[in-house]
Length: 448
Image 1: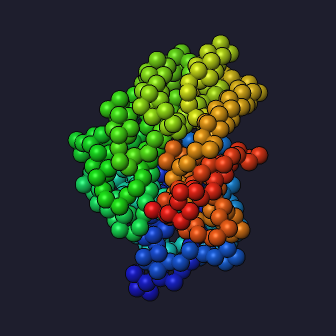
Image 2 (image 1 turned 90 degrees about the vertical axis):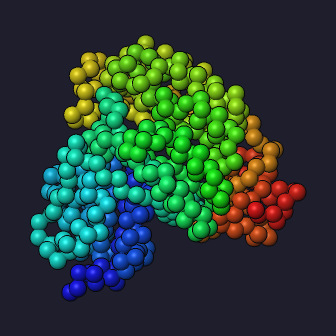
Image 3 (image 1 turned 180 degrees about the horizontal axis):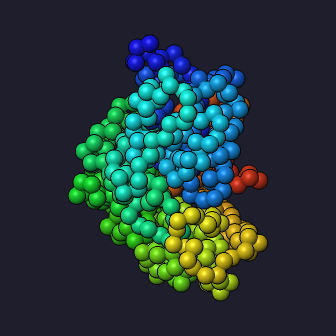
């Protein structure tokens, strides 16, 4: 068989765990396979090829990865199985012992996955492992993909030079590196040419953008803001010490960057932040939130918090809870601390019991629900522009406002279309906390 014909006509199934960056990279792999003649498998079909993109941010994530691999192998028993992502980089030998896995691809080789797949396809004997040591992970694999949503995800940066004591991401993804602004602007223009309206800027530590090219994240967002045809950009998670006042002021006056921030706090205790080796304290974090609120009172602010980390005494948690309660933020993403092999956190005394982790997590989740409900309630009766996304069969159209309120929009005249910017009036929330909306009275059919 001709090398270029190996994949043509095959079917593929995909499964992604973890962050938005992983979903973007899986989508790019899928697009490249489609260009090689591979069709995405139907709901009831058996796939010839399975791609599983993994996460390893917690022990629970590792467990979910193993479950997903076993599940895909059972669902597609004769498929060629490829495992990539952070878990593949960190635990390749363990994955290789799973019967049915054919190819394991680490961070440095992810951009070569199609050629590796072609090479291995004809020699399905023992699993083939393609990983490199962390210090040798230097390649930036571009990714800008739509996936199954209206929004596009543009990967601008990969890797991390912040060695927080609890985190394995630098080991899994390597050092900080990035694409050039010129190449990213060109990718954004291609999205506009395809009819894309919204781009989410993704990476591992996007505020650290520029290590490879001598540019800055501020330079990047200024350049992207000038791309005609893109209506919305969203900045994914950005470190508080890298979210400068200059960046916040730019977003506030921007034509296209939305009033939406996702900022990892991890702990509201300065003692715990010190143990984590985070590069800020609570005073700096509070200052960033205050600046956002002063310039963009209705901005959505999501915050990551880890509970039960080593060294988090009851006193530290109480201090953290009070600090977080005082912040005018919109939503908390609460994670329970997980022991990760090879991290310096294992040297910290005072281990928090699972019971205490659960209790603290539930307290912060309840606090998050209160803050989100208050944020949504404040907007009831107002009008907003929603970018509509493809609904599931039998479900109403939904989408997000500029400040990331999820809205379900019903219209009996069926005038709604996917990927349209539509003016709606926010009418109230249902029992699940979802905002409801109807077409604006002034714009019954005005979809921009």
